[in-house]
Image (cartoon, rainbow, N blue to C red; front, side, top):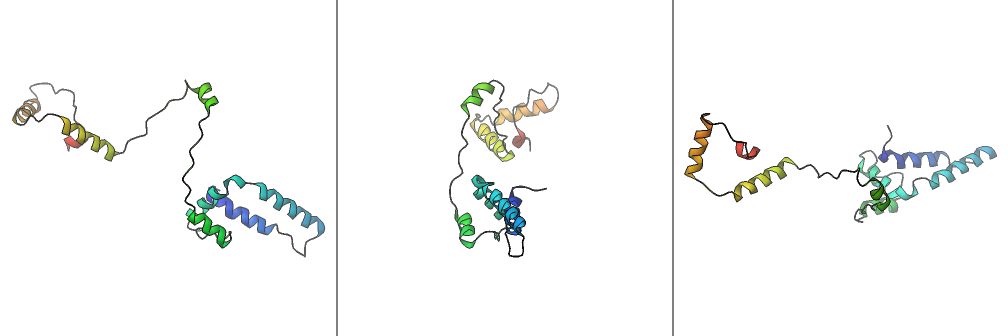
Length: 153
C-alpha cells in the first residue's frame, strides 16, 4: 500500500528513470520528456508535506532523493501549522446535520477533574464515615454513586 511518505521517493525514482539518455531513440526521448513534464506538475502544493512525511519514515529519513540544501530546509522548517479555513457555504448548507462533539478526554484528565470535584466538596469527617458504614451494611438502598473511579480505588 502506498501512503504519503512513499510518494516523494517514488516520484523522484520515476523522474530519474524517465530522464532521457543518449542511447534512447527520438520517440523514447520525447515520451520521457512528456512524462517528466507531467511529473513536475504533480503534488507541487504538497511538496513540503510529502517531504516531511518521507523524513519521518526511517527508510527515507535522510531524504536521499533531495539535494542537501532542500533536505536541510525540510528539517529546519519551523512554520506553524496552518489553520483550516472554515467553509461558510458548507456550514450553511449542512449546519443542522453536523454534530459538534467534544474531544474524548483521557483517563488522566477525567481523574484530575474528579480530584478537583472532590476537593470542592465540604469535609464531613466522622459523619461521612458513619453514613458510609450504614449504606454499606445494605440495610438501606445505596443512592446513585456520585463519586468517580478515583475515589473507588
